[in-house]
Structures are given as C-alpha cells and as structure tokens.
Length: 297
Image (cartoon, rainbow, N blue to C red):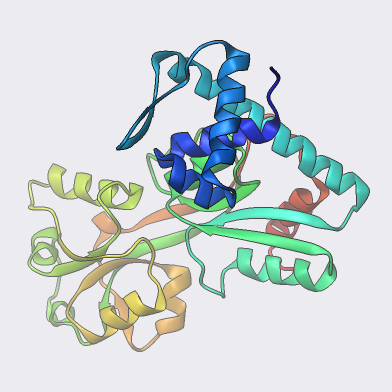
C-alpha cells in the first residue's frame, strides 16, 4: 500500500501533538482520517511507528529512526510546492516570516508593509517567538526566514545575514534613585528587581555570566518578557524596575526612560536574517532580504 504526502503530514502532527484527536483538530480533519493515514504509512514502511494508548501516542524505536527522514521529506515537499507557486506567479505567493518582536516600528515590519503595498497577491504568515525556536522552524522548513537578535556568544544552525547592530544597555525610569549615585555597580543593580527575558534566552544567560564572574548575586527577575514591548517599557517607566533595553527601543521613550552608565552591561546585539541552509530562495525571500539590507523600503 502506498502513502501520500498528507499521510506524512498527519504522522508529523501526531508526533508533535502526542495525541490523535488533537492532531486531527489541528489539521482540520476527522480522527478516522488521521488513523487511516497512519495505517497506510505504517503498512508502507512495514513496521509500527507509533505506540497508541488511552493517554495518547509516542514514537516506537523504529518511529524515532523514521521521524527525521519524514521531517526532511515534508520540508522538501513544502519547498517544492512553494517554488512552483512562485514560478506561476512571480510576485504572488506566501512568505512565512518569524520575528522576535512584533513592534510596528521595526525595519522588518516596515519592509513587509511595503511589500504588501507593492504586491497585492502576496500573503504573509507571521510567527512571533524566541530566537532559538525560530531558528529551528526555519531549519525544519516551517518558516522561510526569520529576523532575530544575536548576542555575544550566540550561535545559529541556519545561514544568517547580518542586518545591523543595536546597542543594549541597562535602563530605568528617568528619576530612578540610582541616577543619584556617582557610580553604579553591579551590586547596586542587584538590589533592584528586573524585567528580563526567560532563563533560556541568550541575553539573560549573558547577563547572568557577567554577574557570576563578578561574584555578585544575579538580578531578581519579577517580570519575564521576551522583548521590550510597549507594555514592558510602560512598567519600566512607572516603577523602580531595571531592564536591558536596545537603543532602537529607547529612542521612543526619551524623557521617561534613561540609560544607567554601567560599562559591564553595555554591549552590542546584531540583528540577523536566518534562512534554511542550502534551500532555494524564492523571489519573495530575495526581495525581503534586499529591502532589509537597503535600510529602507
């Protein structure tokens, strides 16, 4: 019995969800449709790929071996289908972009807005997430490209193109008590609560390492925010919280939030454009990169 591309897609979604019912709901099909697709796939492969129970599903040993090939097959099929669409309509199609920050004043958002104005047939699918997660989605073919910040010590498995740099510094409300000090130390900073990304983020690991090497207790994080959104900046401006803030974000809060002079915690982050290694680029991807590198739409 032969299997179809949809059967592979059903299998991968069941692996991701760990449950047939949730996979069926996610794919917009019935559970019997999922079950039939899995049966065709397992009969074609010749071995069970999933163990089923009342609690859900999990990969068998043979399934663990098979799943990576299935992911590569799925990504290649999606890539071929997208390329065929681009061939049929040069300026139309779907562009799947990942961002770590959805703020409307970013270069990536301005470029996407310009592309929509220029190309009425264009569809854009935006994914907002952490850098590591977006890198994985690009590598697996779930996203075409992603714009993410790279901090000192960061690394990515995808190919990356440098887009520019942004200074990151400690900031606080303009009338924060620390501005009355002649010099601010890491120990002074540790006495206040912070806004910071999750423990897994590159920026937080970098800061924790700086405090550890100085034998100072790490910052106490009371608000976790993956990026300095308007909400996070409003809390920073209205409390005694501290945060690491990119210069591009600070410019919109002049007079309300200011930089604390702490040389140990002043560094550059690099914005990079991630793309799948060895993947063929569509005209839409090339246009997106070219507009970003041009610095203006």
